[in-house]
Length: 290
Image 1 (cartoon, helix red, strand yellow):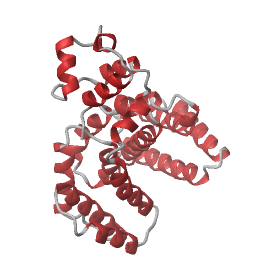
Image 2 (cartoon, rainbow, N blue to C red):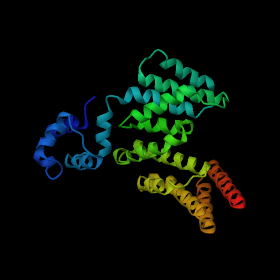
Image 3 (cartoon, rainbow, N blue to C red):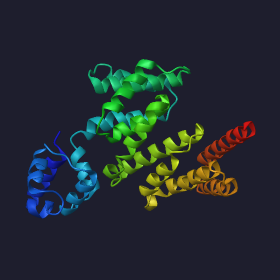
Image 4 (cartoon, one colour):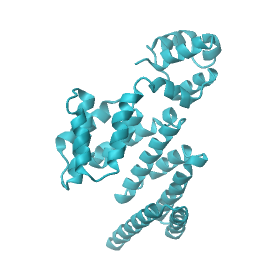
């Protein structure tokens, strides 16, 4: 697959725009030459500035970049996402059979993820250590997380050892500027951040939540992000409650839950209400013990 630099060269040449016009004030001429050859990399911030000079949106740029690999990847991961919405073991077994003839590292990761999903549906209490190790190693070794990697981490997070999760959280945050400019990327990132904060609350560990809330707010600024803005209100209430502002935090939580309910998200409202009560109960128990 071509690099960002090679794709930018193709776009630039097709538009008959000079290197000087695109790169002046951003990177040097010599670096630009190597970047367009695919031998040098740049930060997400610089990439955004360069793409803007080409009169191409970041969304369109990423769609162009991924267009060669999307059909195959989307076929598996879209099927995977649909299967996540069922509790039928047969659906997972069917998906597993489709990839069983494939070989290689990526297929090992897919197989490990499906095995953990299947074991969960079948009621197994202990996660398969080999499958978890395959997933953990893959996520550690992947320097550049794709949207599929983020989706995978979100689904598999609960199986990973607690000690390895925090570095993954920051690895996820490093992808925000890369993917937040187009709808599919925002959607996956929003779901990932919300899942992480739900996990924090369930484990009664809220010390990393403020950074996550700010990140979720950052990628939920437009109308499409309204649902996640409401969740940010809820999460801020949890943080305030946990830091001793129980009345103010509780009011913020109640308001967020009420809005969810008013907008028709009854199941989610009930879920977050239950999560809050459990969080408050555990914290009150801790205070009693102290």
